[in-house]
Length: 314
Length: 270
Image 1 (cartoon, rainbow over the protein chains, first blue to last red):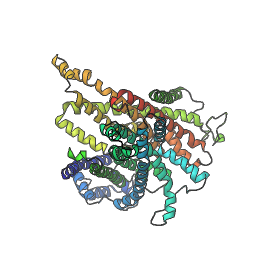
Image 2: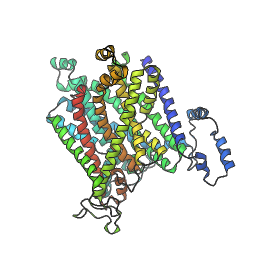
Image 3: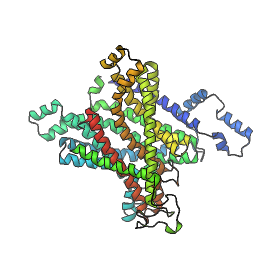
Image 4: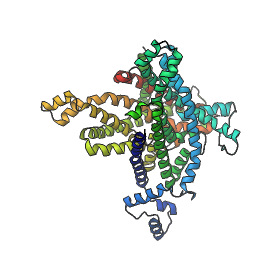
Protein backbone atom coordinates (compact mmCIF):
# COMPACT_ATOMS: atom_id res chain seq x y z
CA UNK A 1 0.00 0.00 0.00
CA UNK A 2 2.77 2.41 0.99
CA UNK A 3 4.66 1.86 -2.24
CA UNK A 4 1.48 2.51 -4.19
CA UNK A 5 0.98 5.79 -2.37
CA UNK A 6 4.60 6.83 -2.86
CA UNK A 7 4.60 5.92 -6.53
CA UNK A 8 1.41 7.87 -7.11
CA UNK A 9 2.82 10.86 -5.18
CA UNK A 10 6.02 10.79 -7.21
CA UNK A 11 3.96 11.01 -10.39
CA UNK A 12 2.28 14.15 -9.17
CA UNK A 13 5.38 16.31 -8.78
CA UNK A 14 6.49 16.45 -12.43
CA UNK A 15 2.87 17.01 -13.45
CA UNK A 16 2.56 19.95 -11.08
CA UNK A 17 5.86 21.40 -12.31
CA UNK A 18 4.77 21.16 -15.92
CA UNK A 19 1.41 22.69 -15.07
CA UNK A 20 3.19 25.60 -13.38
CA UNK A 21 5.45 25.97 -16.40
CA UNK A 22 2.45 25.96 -18.74
CA UNK A 23 0.64 28.67 -16.75
CA UNK A 24 3.82 30.76 -16.48
CA UNK A 25 4.43 30.54 -20.23
CA UNK A 26 0.80 31.21 -21.10
CA UNK A 27 0.67 34.41 -19.12
CA UNK A 28 3.99 35.60 -20.57
CA UNK A 29 2.66 34.98 -24.07
CA UNK A 30 -0.11 37.51 -23.61
CA UNK A 31 0.54 40.42 -25.94
CA UNK A 32 1.26 43.74 -24.21
CA UNK A 33 3.43 44.76 -21.31
CA UNK A 34 1.89 44.06 -17.91
CA UNK A 35 3.82 46.93 -16.29
CA UNK A 36 2.59 49.40 -18.88
CA UNK A 37 -0.87 48.09 -18.13
CA UNK A 38 -0.45 48.50 -14.38
CA UNK A 39 0.89 52.05 -14.61
CA UNK A 40 -1.29 53.21 -17.48
CA UNK A 41 -0.31 54.50 -20.91
CA UNK A 42 0.82 57.88 -19.64
CA UNK A 43 3.52 56.41 -17.38
CA UNK A 44 7.03 57.80 -17.40
CA UNK A 45 9.44 55.40 -19.22
CA UNK A 46 11.93 55.62 -16.35
CA UNK A 47 9.20 54.63 -13.94
CA UNK A 48 8.30 51.67 -16.15
CA UNK A 49 11.89 50.46 -16.21
CA UNK A 50 12.10 50.90 -12.44
CA UNK A 51 8.93 48.90 -11.90
CA UNK A 52 10.09 46.19 -14.31
CA UNK A 53 13.27 45.83 -12.30
CA UNK A 54 11.34 45.78 -9.03
CA UNK A 55 9.08 43.02 -10.34
CA UNK A 56 12.05 41.04 -11.63
CA UNK A 57 10.86 41.26 -15.22
CA UNK A 58 14.34 42.26 -16.43
CA UNK A 59 15.76 38.86 -15.51
CA UNK A 60 16.02 36.03 -18.08
CA UNK A 61 12.85 33.91 -18.30
CA UNK A 62 14.19 30.75 -16.60
CA UNK A 63 15.36 32.87 -13.66
CA UNK A 64 11.96 34.55 -13.53
CA UNK A 65 10.31 31.15 -13.51
CA UNK A 66 12.37 29.88 -10.61
CA UNK A 67 11.82 33.08 -8.62
CA UNK A 68 8.09 32.93 -9.36
CA UNK A 69 7.89 29.25 -8.45
CA UNK A 70 9.61 29.97 -5.16
CA UNK A 71 6.97 32.56 -4.34
CA UNK A 72 4.13 30.30 -5.47
CA UNK A 73 5.45 27.52 -3.25
CA UNK A 74 4.96 29.70 -0.18
CA UNK A 75 1.53 30.84 -1.35
CA UNK A 76 2.54 34.26 -2.66
CA UNK A 77 0.68 34.66 -5.93
CA UNK A 78 1.04 38.41 -6.09
CA UNK A 79 -1.61 41.10 -5.90
CA UNK A 80 -4.58 41.81 -8.09
CA UNK A 81 -3.97 44.70 -10.49
CA UNK A 82 -7.56 45.92 -10.24
CA UNK A 83 -7.94 46.14 -6.47
CA UNK A 84 -4.52 45.47 -4.97
CA UNK A 85 -5.74 42.55 -2.86
CA UNK A 86 -3.48 39.52 -2.49
CA UNK A 87 -4.55 36.84 -4.99
CA UNK A 88 -4.50 33.75 -2.79
CA UNK A 89 -7.04 34.80 -0.12
CA UNK A 90 -9.26 36.16 -2.88
CA UNK A 91 -9.22 32.81 -4.65
CA UNK A 92 -9.81 30.82 -1.49
CA UNK A 93 -12.85 32.93 -0.67
CA UNK A 94 -14.27 32.42 -4.16
CA UNK A 95 -13.34 28.75 -4.17
CA UNK A 96 -15.57 28.07 -1.19
CA UNK A 97 -18.59 28.93 -3.31
CA UNK A 98 -17.53 26.89 -6.37
CA UNK A 99 -16.17 23.98 -4.36
CA UNK A 100 -19.34 23.63 -2.33
CA UNK A 101 -21.59 23.59 -5.39
CA UNK A 102 -19.44 21.10 -7.27
CA UNK A 103 -19.00 18.75 -4.33
CA UNK A 104 -22.67 18.66 -3.37
CA UNK A 105 -23.79 18.29 -6.99
CA UNK A 106 -21.39 15.44 -7.68
CA UNK A 107 -22.40 13.73 -4.44
CA UNK A 108 -26.11 13.80 -5.30
CA UNK A 109 -25.43 12.88 -8.90
CA UNK A 110 -23.45 9.81 -7.82
CA UNK A 111 -26.13 8.90 -5.29
CA UNK A 112 -28.73 8.76 -8.05
CA UNK A 113 -26.63 7.71 -11.02
CA UNK A 114 -24.80 4.69 -9.61
CA UNK A 115 -28.00 2.79 -8.66
CA UNK A 116 -29.66 3.88 -11.91
CA UNK A 117 -26.71 2.56 -13.92
CA UNK A 118 -26.73 -0.70 -11.97
CA UNK A 119 -30.44 -1.12 -12.53
CA UNK A 120 -30.08 -0.42 -16.25
CA UNK A 121 -27.25 -2.94 -16.56
CA UNK A 122 -29.25 -5.55 -14.67
CA UNK A 123 -32.13 -5.15 -17.11
CA UNK A 124 -29.85 -4.67 -20.13
CA UNK A 125 -31.69 -4.06 -23.43
CA UNK A 126 -35.05 -4.26 -21.75
CA UNK A 127 -37.49 -1.35 -21.60
CA UNK A 128 -36.22 -0.14 -18.21
CA UNK A 129 -32.65 -0.05 -19.51
CA UNK A 130 -33.61 1.73 -22.71
CA UNK A 131 -35.57 4.30 -20.73
CA UNK A 132 -32.66 4.96 -18.36
CA UNK A 133 -30.14 5.22 -21.19
CA UNK A 134 -32.42 7.50 -23.19
CA UNK A 135 -32.94 9.73 -20.15
CA UNK A 136 -29.23 9.84 -19.40
CA UNK A 137 -28.31 10.65 -22.99
CA UNK A 138 -30.90 13.40 -23.02
CA UNK A 139 -29.54 14.94 -19.78
CA UNK A 140 -26.02 14.65 -21.16
CA UNK A 141 -27.02 16.66 -24.21
CA UNK A 142 -28.41 19.68 -22.39
CA UNK A 143 -25.83 22.42 -21.91
CA UNK A 144 -25.50 23.40 -18.25
CA UNK A 145 -26.03 27.06 -18.93
CA UNK A 146 -29.24 26.49 -20.87
CA UNK A 147 -30.70 24.14 -18.27
CA UNK A 148 -29.79 26.72 -15.65
CA UNK A 149 -31.54 29.49 -17.58
CA UNK A 150 -34.66 27.33 -18.04
CA UNK A 151 -34.80 26.44 -14.35
CA UNK A 152 -34.31 30.10 -13.45
CA UNK A 153 -37.11 31.02 -15.79
CA UNK A 154 -39.45 28.42 -14.32
CA UNK A 155 -38.71 28.56 -10.59
CA UNK A 156 -37.41 32.11 -10.38
CA UNK A 157 -39.52 34.15 -12.76
CA UNK A 158 -42.70 32.20 -13.56
CA UNK A 159 -43.33 30.54 -10.20
CA UNK A 160 -41.39 33.02 -8.10
CA UNK A 161 -40.30 30.34 -5.61
CA UNK A 162 -36.59 31.06 -5.73
CA UNK A 163 -34.48 34.21 -6.05
CA UNK A 164 -33.14 34.94 -9.53
CA UNK A 165 -30.00 36.99 -8.95
CA UNK A 166 -27.39 37.00 -6.23
CA UNK A 167 -25.83 34.99 -3.48
CA UNK A 168 -25.83 34.92 0.32
CA UNK A 169 -22.96 33.22 2.17
CA UNK A 170 -23.93 30.36 4.50
CA UNK A 171 -22.18 32.12 7.38
CA UNK A 172 -24.62 35.02 7.07
CA UNK A 173 -28.02 33.41 6.79
CA UNK A 174 -28.28 29.66 6.35
CA UNK A 175 -31.86 29.55 5.07
CA UNK A 176 -31.34 32.35 2.57
CA UNK A 177 -28.05 30.85 1.39
CA UNK A 178 -29.80 27.57 0.73
CA UNK A 179 -32.43 29.30 -1.42
CA UNK A 180 -29.77 30.92 -3.59
CA UNK A 181 -27.68 27.82 -4.04
CA UNK A 182 -30.32 25.17 -4.65
CA UNK A 183 -30.86 25.88 -8.35
CA UNK A 184 -27.16 25.87 -9.33
CA UNK A 185 -26.74 22.57 -7.51
CA UNK A 186 -29.82 21.01 -9.10
CA UNK A 187 -28.67 22.14 -12.55
CA UNK A 188 -25.23 20.67 -12.15
CA UNK A 189 -26.58 17.47 -10.59
CA UNK A 190 -28.95 16.85 -13.48
CA UNK A 191 -26.26 17.23 -16.11
CA UNK A 192 -23.81 15.03 -14.21
CA UNK A 193 -26.39 12.29 -13.67
CA UNK A 194 -26.32 11.79 -17.43
CA UNK A 195 -22.56 11.17 -17.62
CA UNK A 196 -22.36 9.07 -14.49
CA UNK A 197 -25.34 6.84 -15.23
CA UNK A 198 -23.88 5.83 -18.56
CA UNK A 199 -20.49 5.15 -17.00
CA UNK A 200 -21.79 3.11 -14.10
CA UNK A 201 -24.07 1.15 -16.43
CA UNK A 202 -21.13 0.24 -18.67
CA UNK A 203 -19.07 -0.80 -15.65
CA UNK A 204 -21.91 -2.87 -14.18
CA UNK A 205 -22.47 -4.67 -17.48
CA UNK A 206 -18.80 -5.66 -17.52
CA UNK A 207 -19.07 -7.07 -14.02
CA UNK A 208 -22.43 -8.79 -14.51
CA UNK A 209 -21.01 -11.12 -17.13
CA UNK A 210 -18.15 -12.35 -14.94
CA UNK A 211 -18.14 -15.93 -13.71
CA UNK A 212 -18.32 -15.09 -10.04
CA UNK A 213 -21.66 -13.38 -10.56
CA UNK A 214 -23.02 -16.49 -12.23
CA UNK A 215 -21.58 -18.45 -9.33
CA UNK A 216 -23.28 -16.22 -6.80
CA UNK A 217 -26.57 -16.71 -8.60
CA UNK A 218 -26.01 -20.44 -8.96
CA UNK A 219 -25.57 -20.89 -5.27
CA UNK A 220 -29.01 -19.39 -4.84
CA UNK A 221 -28.35 -15.88 -3.61
CA UNK A 222 -31.30 -13.55 -4.12
CA UNK A 223 -30.79 -11.03 -6.97
CA UNK A 224 -30.79 -8.15 -4.52
CA UNK A 225 -27.84 -9.60 -2.69
CA UNK A 226 -26.01 -10.48 -5.90
CA UNK A 227 -26.32 -6.88 -7.09
CA UNK A 228 -25.58 -5.14 -3.83
CA UNK A 229 -22.86 -7.40 -2.49
CA UNK A 230 -21.16 -8.67 -5.62
CA UNK A 231 -21.78 -6.34 -8.53
CA UNK A 232 -22.00 -2.87 -6.99
CA UNK A 233 -18.59 -2.78 -5.28
CA UNK A 234 -16.72 -3.84 -8.40
CA UNK A 235 -18.77 -1.72 -10.74
CA UNK A 236 -18.25 1.33 -8.55
CA UNK A 237 -14.47 1.46 -8.97
CA UNK A 238 -14.41 2.85 -12.54
CA UNK A 239 -17.18 5.29 -11.65
CA UNK A 240 -15.09 6.48 -8.74
CA UNK A 241 -12.26 7.43 -11.11
CA UNK A 242 -14.76 9.24 -13.29
CA UNK A 243 -15.97 11.18 -10.27
CA UNK A 244 -12.44 12.52 -9.82
CA UNK A 245 -12.25 13.62 -13.44
CA UNK A 246 -15.69 15.19 -13.23
CA UNK A 247 -14.84 17.15 -10.10
CA UNK A 248 -11.87 18.70 -11.84
CA UNK A 249 -13.68 19.38 -15.08
CA UNK A 250 -16.63 20.93 -13.32
CA UNK A 251 -14.34 23.30 -11.52
CA UNK A 252 -12.79 24.28 -14.84
CA UNK A 253 -16.15 24.84 -16.46
CA UNK A 254 -18.01 26.30 -13.52
CA UNK A 255 -17.64 29.87 -14.80
CA UNK A 256 -20.61 29.30 -17.07
CA UNK A 257 -22.88 28.16 -14.25
CA UNK A 258 -21.72 30.99 -12.02
CA UNK A 259 -22.48 33.43 -14.81
CA UNK A 260 -26.03 32.11 -15.19
CA UNK A 261 -26.72 32.30 -11.46
CA UNK A 262 -24.54 35.36 -10.76
CA UNK A 263 -22.54 33.54 -8.09
CA UNK A 264 -19.23 34.95 -6.81
CA UNK A 265 -17.25 31.78 -7.47
CA UNK A 266 -13.75 31.00 -8.71
CA UNK A 267 -14.81 30.55 -12.33
CA UNK A 268 -16.44 33.96 -12.41
CA UNK A 269 -13.31 35.46 -10.84
CA UNK A 270 -11.22 33.96 -13.64
CA UNK A 271 -13.50 35.23 -16.39
CA UNK A 272 -13.84 38.69 -14.85
CA UNK A 273 -10.06 38.90 -14.51
CA UNK A 274 -9.63 37.90 -18.14
CA UNK A 275 -11.89 40.79 -19.13
CA UNK A 276 -10.14 43.17 -16.75
CA UNK A 277 -6.70 41.97 -17.96
CA UNK A 278 -5.85 41.32 -14.32
CA UNK A 279 -3.06 38.88 -15.10
CA UNK A 280 -1.89 38.00 -11.59
CA UNK A 281 -5.42 36.83 -10.83
CA UNK A 282 -5.77 35.00 -14.17
CA UNK A 283 -2.47 33.26 -13.51
CA UNK A 284 -3.49 32.43 -9.96
CA UNK A 285 -6.88 31.05 -10.94
CA UNK A 286 -5.47 28.87 -13.72
CA UNK A 287 -2.80 27.53 -11.40
CA UNK A 288 -5.17 27.04 -8.49
CA UNK A 289 -7.79 25.19 -10.54
CA UNK A 290 -5.20 22.95 -12.15
CA UNK A 291 -3.69 22.26 -8.73
CA UNK A 292 -7.07 21.30 -7.28
CA UNK A 293 -7.68 19.09 -10.30
CA UNK A 294 -4.38 17.28 -9.85
CA UNK A 295 -4.93 16.93 -6.10
CA UNK A 296 -8.49 15.65 -6.46
CA UNK A 297 -7.31 13.03 -8.91
CA UNK A 298 -4.50 12.13 -6.54
CA UNK A 299 -6.93 11.64 -3.67
CA UNK A 300 -9.29 9.65 -5.89
CA UNK A 301 -6.46 7.40 -7.01
CA UNK A 302 -5.24 6.94 -3.46
CA UNK A 303 -8.74 5.92 -2.38
CA UNK A 304 -9.11 3.59 -5.34
CA UNK A 305 -7.66 0.52 -3.60
CA UNK A 306 -10.41 0.85 -1.01
CA UNK A 307 -12.90 0.01 -3.73
CA UNK A 308 -10.73 -2.28 -5.79
CA UNK A 309 -8.05 -4.05 -3.71
CA UNK A 310 -6.55 -5.57 -6.86
CA UNK A 311 -4.95 -2.26 -7.76
CA UNK A 312 -2.34 -2.07 -5.02
CA UNK A 313 -1.24 -5.61 -5.76
CA UNK A 314 0.01 -4.57 -9.19
CA UNK B 1 -32.59 -2.70 -33.23
CA UNK B 2 -31.43 -0.19 -30.65
CA UNK B 3 -28.29 0.38 -32.68
CA UNK B 4 -30.25 1.30 -35.78
CA UNK B 5 -32.53 3.64 -33.84
CA UNK B 6 -29.49 5.51 -32.49
CA UNK B 7 -27.90 5.82 -35.91
CA UNK B 8 -31.14 6.92 -37.51
CA UNK B 9 -32.11 9.58 -34.96
CA UNK B 10 -28.52 10.80 -34.47
CA UNK B 11 -27.86 10.86 -38.19
CA UNK B 12 -31.08 12.74 -38.89
CA UNK B 13 -30.37 15.37 -36.23
CA UNK B 14 -26.81 15.93 -37.42
CA UNK B 15 -27.97 15.89 -41.02
CA UNK B 16 -30.42 18.69 -40.29
CA UNK B 17 -27.72 20.74 -38.57
CA UNK B 18 -25.23 20.26 -41.40
CA UNK B 19 -27.88 21.05 -44.00
CA UNK B 20 -28.90 24.19 -42.11
CA UNK B 21 -25.28 25.26 -41.79
CA UNK B 22 -24.72 24.72 -45.51
CA UNK B 23 -27.93 26.55 -46.45
CA UNK B 24 -27.01 29.50 -44.26
CA UNK B 25 -23.86 30.13 -46.29
CA UNK B 26 -25.98 30.97 -49.33
CA UNK B 27 -29.44 31.88 -48.00
CA UNK B 28 -31.21 32.94 -44.82
CA UNK B 29 -34.78 34.35 -44.63
CA UNK B 30 -33.41 37.74 -43.56
CA UNK B 31 -29.94 39.18 -43.21
CA UNK B 32 -28.90 37.85 -39.78
CA UNK B 33 -27.08 41.11 -39.02
CA UNK B 34 -29.79 43.49 -40.29
CA UNK B 35 -30.95 45.71 -37.44
CA UNK B 36 -34.63 46.72 -37.60
CA UNK B 37 -35.58 48.90 -34.67
CA UNK B 38 -39.26 48.94 -35.62
CA UNK B 39 -39.46 45.16 -35.18
CA UNK B 40 -37.73 44.79 -31.81
CA UNK B 41 -38.53 41.76 -29.61
CA UNK B 42 -41.40 40.56 -31.77
CA UNK B 43 -42.74 37.14 -30.73
CA UNK B 44 -42.76 34.32 -33.31
CA UNK B 45 -45.17 35.10 -36.14
CA UNK B 46 -45.77 34.30 -39.78
CA UNK B 47 -43.33 37.01 -40.74
CA UNK B 48 -40.61 36.01 -38.24
CA UNK B 49 -40.98 32.29 -37.50
CA UNK B 50 -38.82 32.41 -34.39
CA UNK B 51 -39.43 36.04 -33.51
CA UNK B 52 -36.91 38.88 -33.45
CA UNK B 53 -34.26 39.91 -30.93
CA UNK B 54 -33.59 43.15 -29.07
CA UNK B 55 -32.26 44.77 -32.25
CA UNK B 56 -35.10 43.50 -34.41
CA UNK B 57 -32.90 40.93 -36.08
CA UNK B 58 -34.63 37.75 -37.29
CA UNK B 59 -33.92 34.92 -34.83
CA UNK B 60 -34.37 32.14 -37.39
CA UNK B 61 -31.79 33.73 -39.70
CA UNK B 62 -29.42 34.13 -36.78
CA UNK B 63 -29.96 30.53 -35.68
CA UNK B 64 -29.12 29.37 -39.20
CA UNK B 65 -26.04 31.56 -39.46
CA UNK B 66 -25.08 30.44 -35.95
CA UNK B 67 -25.24 26.81 -37.06
CA UNK B 68 -22.81 27.70 -39.82
CA UNK B 69 -20.36 29.32 -37.40
CA UNK B 70 -20.63 26.57 -34.79
CA UNK B 71 -20.24 23.73 -37.28
CA UNK B 72 -17.32 25.44 -38.99
CA UNK B 73 -15.55 26.09 -35.68
CA UNK B 74 -16.19 22.54 -34.48
CA UNK B 75 -15.01 20.93 -37.71
CA UNK B 76 -11.88 23.07 -37.92
CA UNK B 77 -11.09 22.40 -34.26
CA UNK B 78 -11.51 18.65 -34.56
CA UNK B 79 -9.40 18.64 -37.72
CA UNK B 80 -6.70 20.69 -35.99
CA UNK B 81 -6.69 18.48 -32.90
CA UNK B 82 -6.58 15.30 -34.98
CA UNK B 83 -3.74 16.49 -37.22
CA UNK B 84 -1.62 17.71 -34.30
CA UNK B 85 -2.56 14.66 -32.21
CA UNK B 86 -1.79 12.13 -34.92
CA UNK B 87 1.59 13.64 -35.76
CA UNK B 88 2.72 13.86 -32.13
CA UNK B 89 1.17 10.50 -31.24
CA UNK B 90 2.90 8.70 -34.09
CA UNK B 91 6.21 10.36 -33.31
CA UNK B 92 5.93 9.44 -29.62
CA UNK B 93 4.83 5.88 -30.27
CA UNK B 94 7.29 5.30 -33.04
CA UNK B 95 10.50 6.99 -31.96
CA UNK B 96 10.00 6.06 -28.28
CA UNK B 97 12.86 6.70 -25.85
CA UNK B 98 13.37 10.24 -24.59
CA UNK B 99 11.30 11.90 -27.28
CA UNK B 100 8.36 9.80 -26.17
CA UNK B 101 8.95 10.47 -22.50
CA UNK B 102 9.17 14.24 -22.90
CA UNK B 103 6.23 14.42 -25.29
CA UNK B 104 4.07 12.34 -22.98
CA UNK B 105 5.08 14.30 -19.89
CA UNK B 106 3.99 17.54 -21.56
CA UNK B 107 0.91 15.80 -22.89
CA UNK B 108 -0.07 14.55 -19.46
CA UNK B 109 0.44 18.00 -18.00
CA UNK B 110 -1.93 19.39 -20.62
CA UNK B 111 -4.40 16.62 -19.81
CA UNK B 112 -4.08 17.66 -16.18
CA UNK B 113 -5.84 20.86 -17.22
CA UNK B 114 -9.56 20.62 -17.62
CA UNK B 115 -10.08 21.28 -21.34
CA UNK B 116 -12.22 24.36 -20.98
CA UNK B 117 -9.75 25.89 -18.53
CA UNK B 118 -6.86 25.41 -20.92
CA UNK B 119 -9.02 26.90 -23.66
CA UNK B 120 -9.79 29.90 -21.42
CA UNK B 121 -6.07 30.36 -20.82
CA UNK B 122 -5.27 30.22 -24.52
CA UNK B 123 -8.15 32.60 -25.30
CA UNK B 124 -6.46 35.16 -23.06
CA UNK B 125 -3.42 35.01 -25.31
CA UNK B 126 -5.05 34.81 -28.74
CA UNK B 127 -8.08 37.01 -28.03
CA UNK B 128 -11.74 36.33 -28.65
CA UNK B 129 -12.32 35.48 -32.31
CA UNK B 130 -13.34 32.53 -34.44
CA UNK B 131 -9.84 31.26 -35.16
CA UNK B 132 -8.69 31.92 -31.63
CA UNK B 133 -11.31 29.41 -30.50
CA UNK B 134 -10.12 26.84 -33.02
CA UNK B 135 -6.58 27.19 -31.72
CA UNK B 136 -7.61 27.23 -28.05
CA UNK B 137 -9.98 24.29 -28.18
CA UNK B 138 -7.77 22.40 -30.62
CA UNK B 139 -4.83 22.62 -28.22
CA UNK B 140 -7.12 21.62 -25.37
CA UNK B 141 -8.36 18.49 -27.12
CA UNK B 142 -5.25 17.41 -29.05
CA UNK B 143 -3.71 15.67 -26.01
CA UNK B 144 -6.48 13.05 -25.94
CA UNK B 145 -5.78 12.27 -29.59
CA UNK B 146 -2.05 11.99 -28.87
CA UNK B 147 -2.81 9.44 -26.15
CA UNK B 148 -5.06 7.29 -28.30
CA UNK B 149 -2.75 7.32 -31.33
CA UNK B 150 0.39 6.63 -29.32
CA UNK B 151 -1.32 3.74 -27.54
CA UNK B 152 -2.45 2.20 -30.79
CA UNK B 153 0.94 2.66 -32.46
CA UNK B 154 2.73 1.09 -29.50
CA UNK B 155 0.42 -1.90 -29.44
CA UNK B 156 0.54 -2.53 -33.17
CA UNK B 157 4.10 -1.75 -34.24
CA UNK B 158 5.56 -5.06 -33.08
CA UNK B 159 2.83 -7.26 -34.57
CA UNK B 160 3.92 -9.95 -37.01
CA UNK B 161 2.34 -8.35 -40.05
CA UNK B 162 4.19 -5.10 -39.49
CA UNK B 163 7.38 -7.09 -38.96
CA UNK B 164 6.63 -8.99 -42.17
CA UNK B 165 6.19 -5.76 -44.08
CA UNK B 166 9.63 -4.60 -42.94
CA UNK B 167 11.12 -7.97 -43.74
CA UNK B 168 9.99 -7.96 -47.35
CA UNK B 169 11.88 -4.71 -47.72
CA UNK B 170 9.24 -2.02 -47.19
CA UNK B 171 10.57 1.17 -45.68
CA UNK B 172 9.76 2.18 -42.10
CA UNK B 173 7.53 5.06 -43.17
CA UNK B 174 5.69 2.92 -45.70
CA UNK B 175 5.06 0.17 -43.15
CA UNK B 176 3.91 2.78 -40.71
CA UNK B 177 1.42 4.44 -43.03
CA UNK B 178 0.25 1.26 -44.73
CA UNK B 179 0.06 -1.16 -41.79
CA UNK B 180 0.10 0.71 -38.49
CA UNK B 181 -1.95 3.82 -39.21
CA UNK B 182 -5.13 2.06 -40.39
CA UNK B 183 -5.47 0.69 -36.87
CA UNK B 184 -5.77 4.24 -35.59
CA UNK B 185 -8.70 5.14 -37.81
CA UNK B 186 -11.42 3.48 -35.73
CA UNK B 187 -10.38 4.95 -32.37
CA UNK B 188 -9.84 8.36 -33.97
CA UNK B 189 -13.28 8.23 -35.58
CA UNK B 190 -14.89 7.43 -32.24
CA UNK B 191 -12.89 10.13 -30.46
CA UNK B 192 -13.52 12.73 -33.17
CA UNK B 193 -17.25 12.24 -32.92
CA UNK B 194 -17.38 12.86 -29.20
CA UNK B 195 -14.82 15.63 -29.63
CA UNK B 196 -17.14 17.35 -32.10
CA UNK B 197 -19.78 17.39 -29.36
CA UNK B 198 -17.37 18.68 -26.68
CA UNK B 199 -16.05 21.39 -28.98
CA UNK B 200 -19.54 22.53 -29.91
CA UNK B 201 -20.47 22.68 -26.24
CA UNK B 202 -17.22 24.41 -25.25
CA UNK B 203 -17.54 26.92 -28.07
CA UNK B 204 -21.06 27.83 -27.03
CA UNK B 205 -19.93 28.03 -23.40
CA UNK B 206 -17.05 30.35 -24.34
CA UNK B 207 -19.35 32.45 -26.51
CA UNK B 208 -21.87 32.52 -23.67
CA UNK B 209 -19.15 33.91 -21.41
CA UNK B 210 -18.28 36.52 -24.01
CA UNK B 211 -14.92 34.87 -24.71
CA UNK B 212 -15.91 33.15 -27.92
CA UNK B 213 -17.11 34.45 -31.24
CA UNK B 214 -17.71 38.17 -30.63
CA UNK B 215 -21.08 39.77 -31.49
CA UNK B 216 -22.70 40.84 -33.76
CA UNK B 217 -21.77 37.57 -35.55
CA UNK B 218 -24.37 35.12 -34.25
CA UNK B 219 -23.53 31.86 -32.51
CA UNK B 220 -25.92 29.81 -30.41
CA UNK B 221 -23.82 30.56 -27.34
CA UNK B 222 -23.71 34.34 -27.67
CA UNK B 223 -27.42 34.41 -28.64
CA UNK B 224 -28.20 32.67 -25.36
CA UNK B 225 -26.04 35.13 -23.47
CA UNK B 226 -27.76 38.06 -25.15
CA UNK B 227 -31.20 36.62 -24.35
CA UNK B 228 -30.66 36.78 -20.59
CA UNK B 229 -31.99 40.29 -19.91
CA UNK B 230 -35.16 39.45 -21.88
CA UNK B 231 -35.67 36.03 -20.34
CA UNK B 232 -39.05 36.91 -18.90
CA UNK B 233 -40.48 39.17 -21.58
CA UNK B 234 -39.07 37.46 -24.68
CA UNK B 235 -38.75 33.81 -23.70
CA UNK B 236 -38.37 32.66 -27.32
CA UNK B 237 -34.94 34.30 -27.50
CA UNK B 238 -33.54 31.86 -24.97
CA UNK B 239 -35.45 28.78 -26.09
CA UNK B 240 -34.41 28.45 -29.72
CA UNK B 241 -30.59 28.58 -29.42
CA UNK B 242 -30.62 26.28 -26.38
CA UNK B 243 -32.80 23.73 -28.15
CA UNK B 244 -30.43 23.85 -31.13
CA UNK B 245 -27.39 23.14 -28.96
CA UNK B 246 -29.21 20.36 -27.10
CA UNK B 247 -30.48 18.65 -30.27
CA UNK B 248 -27.08 18.83 -31.93
CA UNK B 249 -25.40 17.35 -28.87
CA UNK B 250 -28.08 14.65 -28.67
CA UNK B 251 -27.47 13.80 -32.32
CA UNK B 252 -23.72 13.63 -31.77
CA UNK B 253 -24.06 11.50 -28.65
CA UNK B 254 -26.38 9.02 -30.37
CA UNK B 255 -24.19 8.90 -33.46
CA UNK B 256 -21.10 8.51 -31.28
CA UNK B 257 -22.70 5.59 -29.44
CA UNK B 258 -23.55 3.71 -32.60
CA UNK B 259 -20.16 4.47 -34.13
CA UNK B 260 -18.45 3.16 -31.02
CA UNK B 261 -20.59 0.03 -30.98
CA UNK B 262 -19.62 -0.63 -34.56
CA UNK B 263 -15.93 0.29 -34.54
CA UNK B 264 -14.83 -0.58 -31.04
CA UNK B 265 -15.78 -4.21 -30.40
CA UNK B 266 -14.63 -4.01 -26.78
CA UNK B 267 -17.34 -1.50 -26.05
CA UNK B 268 -20.00 -3.17 -28.17
CA UNK B 269 -22.10 -4.23 -25.23
CA UNK B 270 -21.88 -1.00 -23.29
